Length: 354
Image 1 (cartoon, rainbow, N blue to C red):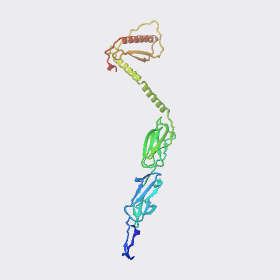
Image 2 (cartoon, one colour; image 1 turned 135 degrees about the vertical axis):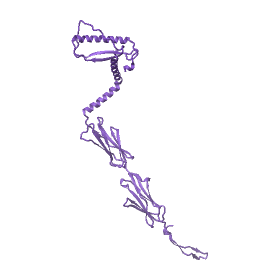
Image 3 (cartoon, rainbow, N blue to C red; image 1 turned 90 degrees about the horizontal axis):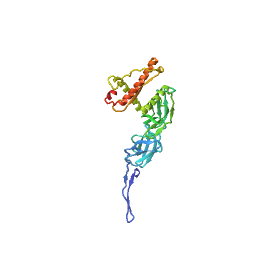
């Protein structure tokens, strides 16, 4: 029954003789049930909607009879959005395309003649994907140089926060920075000789990532920095290629010094000086010419023989003395080479040679 069903009711009866009998009138009053437990729900649930999607605000009552008037309000000031009157416990208000301006608090009111009953507040969040970010490079001077601190600032003008920003140099990640409250983020980079090239950044708030346009940075590299960088690269390459040979040369150099220190107590390494001989013809070498000296040394037991070559700067001598010394060294070298090839050295102290 509805409120309109209130009134006076009676009944009639007709006899076989066509006599009509009426009952006494009874007054029936139909009272409406006041609305109660008004609530506001959203579709999609949770009050979060993507920009451009459909948003529905559903106002409902747990009880209430008769025609119920539903009203929807937006914001703290209570801007009335729509009013509907219907015999139903629920009613809907639809926003076909949600926009950023629709992010607000909402509530509804229901009444059926017994006074309005408001719902609680519901917050609506409109999630906005990030726009394409803008990358700005800031250097301490007009023409950046090696050693300057370059500031990279990336900002997406639209997008729900928090926003995470990634910074790239030639598509290689430099680092990241977040903007919890929206806006942009910055990243500092100390410039080296390798930092010329293209820079870009990326913004992502979980609704899709957007990449900025590339920004090209060309800066001055001092000649010293470039040569030092090139030299270090060359040295690295040589060490990688000639590493074993370099170690062998250093080993031989250290071995020679060890042999020289222990020659006085090791008879196998101390060879007698040859007796000077006289020659009928003396040919003086050019003054200041470096004279090579060769030594063959067996460093461990076995048949391996290593050759050491080093140079001594001759002092100013007379032509005859210089020629005599050169010939003597040649003889000594031949003698050393012959003896070491024939000798089978077994008692050399390996640790001492090292």
